[in-house]
Image (cartoon, rainbow, N blue to C red):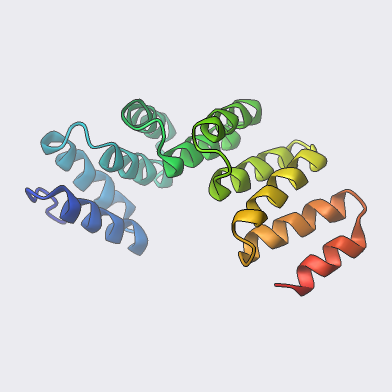
Length: 171
């Protein structure tokens, strides 16, 4: 297990990020749990712990960790996206959409939130709303290929094949 009990929170977060990037999720979860004793109010540490737990399939523990992090940092966009994703995979897409709208009220126009919102709408068959969210996200990040492709998918679902083809060709 990697020692992340450093006195510097930045180095602790960096080490956890590296563990997660390597796919060492069990080690990341254990290390984050230890580090949380030293940094009990670090929203980002708690979020990373939640991500590691989620990757291990420990959904209930991940939900608790992510909710705690959200209490500490309600404006953290990554955290709101993590919680929305968890809600969607639990079949609570309506709750995910509601969470994303609340997050957008605090951080208007944020492309990651709009991308997640578009995905949530598309998963429920609300293609026009999904298209609108992707189109707004694309305004902020016009060169982002994933947003462009998601918008193209929404256009296809709406029967707007020429628009979809144009978007795909621009990737």
